[in-house]
Length: 488
Image (cartoon, rainbow, N blue to C red):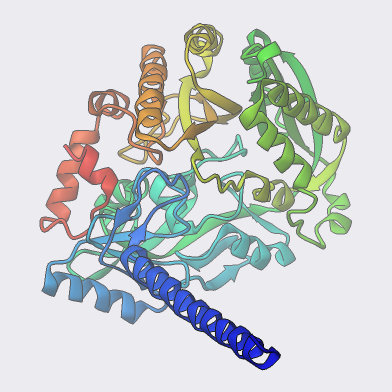
């Protein structure tokens, strides 16, 4: 074969290879396009354990379009679920073949009243949005979660609580809200007007209608001094009563219980936030903090998912970090801007889930003793336990705080296989049984591991709650996977 023939053959091969690459690329494009079309209507939440096929997502970015969506749902008999940041983990924000009303773009701060110390916001606004609006006025939120990434509407729907130990749960800070009912009517709800909705919608998981906007009570921004103490678990109850509740200067508080193998459920530390001289506030409230340098905590948390020595290292790092901050000065607004990026996890075969158990403060020591014995024989990857306080409040029908309680927030890593779900579910139902034995309850925004009879025992008004839901929404226009599982 001559040089010319060789060149022609080589050119032919290159041309064929080029054509093959084009055909292969287009094939991949169409395959992935098809898969995308098949999966584009599959939705899940941050827990990733309940992927569900829905009809569509509708962005609620202005009131008329939201009302129109509800009227259309009534005309076409479509089911509606309401979503914010989708940090609930039990299908609370979607329903199979239903419409998801995404409220995250309905997020305006409508008014900050500096005289009355209130803020009027649309329900898709985040706590971060509120903090940025009120901080220049030396005002702060009364009650919210430790992180500020959640929407106000979502927080109302689960009736959150946080580090503040003097203002209770979120429902206590609500003046009024406007509700879009299942029939398309918009009403104003307060403790005096349309009051029958007030204890149902707050802590109602989106089952009674769409919260459009809300007026919340604010408080003064304050400057706190951090104080960290370490002790054994059986010293915590006495320390809390005497040095936290008994000290009016302590405005906020959290504690952590060790999940490290060497000190499992026996060692603790707590951080108290004590009010200082308000004259010192000005230099500290000029700037709101943002997540920064979270790579170390994210790395150590990752190690704790996979190794026992990683749990020990993470625990020692936490204690050291807060010891070093002893005496550190921080504004209330910045205390309520806890880092959240390090908690973000995108495992392909595993996920992080939450559980939260409420225990009467007088039962803490005995409860931890029994929980420790139980968990020593369980195969569960428990990474963190944060302890907060929430005082007695039964304003919401589905109240979790039937007396003064410690709230234990458990971070658990689990595999996403069906076998792992069964194993984790058995363990969690066992923990809930122990919690109920000590007069406690559990939080509802998480995966549907609890048995229905456990929910009824933890929430004795649950039958009344679901009956009222059907009375106010006879066509069951607003539903979600949580309601499908537990609606009595």
